[in-house]
Amino acid sequence: MAAAPGRRFMKDALGFEQVIQWYPGHMAAAMRRIGERMPLIDIVIEVIDSRLAHASRNPMLDRVAGERPRLLVLTREDLADAAVTMRWLVHLRGCGHDIVAVNAKSPGSVKQVGVHLSQLAARKKRSQRAMAVGLPNSGKSTVINGLLRRSAARTEDRPGVTRATQWFRVAPLLELMDTPGILVPRIQTPQAQWMLAMTGAIPKERYDPQDVVDRFYRWLEDRTSGRTKVPDLAAFARARGFLRRGNTVDMHNAAQSYIKDFNDGKFGRISLEEPV
Ligand SMILES: Nc1nc2c(ncn2[C@@H]2O[C@H](COP(=O)(O)OP(=O)(O)O)[C@@H](O)[C@H]2O)c(=O)[nH]1
Ligand SMILES: [Mg+2]
Image (tube, rainbow, N blue to C red; front, top):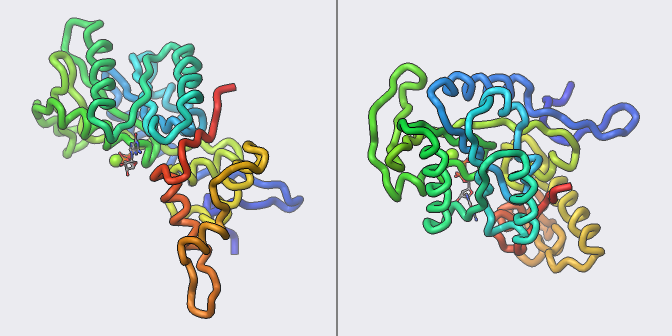
């Protein structure tokens, strides 16, 4: 039986690793949904994970967003290596977009997003509308909720595009769509694949967590010349008591916990990609 596409890392007949795209149909549908809303949108908020600021973008967004002013919001600044994030800010600013790095869970940090959006909106004299887009788990809802919590006044319903769509005024000249646009990752390398899984951008049932953690650990050891204090999966599983009856270790559940701890910052600040 053929394996479902996108399920896990696969090797071809010669043993070379294949990058399995998440169902291609998903990507087309996701871009179509975002494209349908675009005519209503003046400003695009592209939400990116600071730790994965290249692979967590989808270049197809450029096609649907066109020339609209764009604010790149690098979330999880609190989980990334601060020096690497600084380099990303410089690098991505060079692409002509406005950019800010935040801890979306901190109100003071999200305030910065509001400041940047207000500045973008003030370039035109009329009220403008913004929509957040990004991969699953990139922090879209956290950013939107942070902005709404500060200054939300519901403006009007806009039936037609999506029945549930609501607009909130978050600044004198700016309304924000309450529902974000969900992008699908364009996975270009086996490395991007495990990195996206590690940061929560790929649904759990589409990858093998043990494989992802093993790859992460090998990468980390290589990068730190073996001097990392982060435990490998076996040490983590033992320390956290993932024992089954008969004293075997439940590696699958351990690996899922390991990924959760990584995203809770338990292993410290780790950026997975750096600008080249
Ligand atoms: N530490 C940290 N966690 C974040 C940040 N932004 C989002 N999260 C967490 O990441 C998870 C996914 O965020 P969510 O906003 O639901 O992502 P969405 O799928 O893009 O809407 C949640 O558990 C958030 O609390 C951030 O800047 N820092
Ligand atoms: Mg969400």
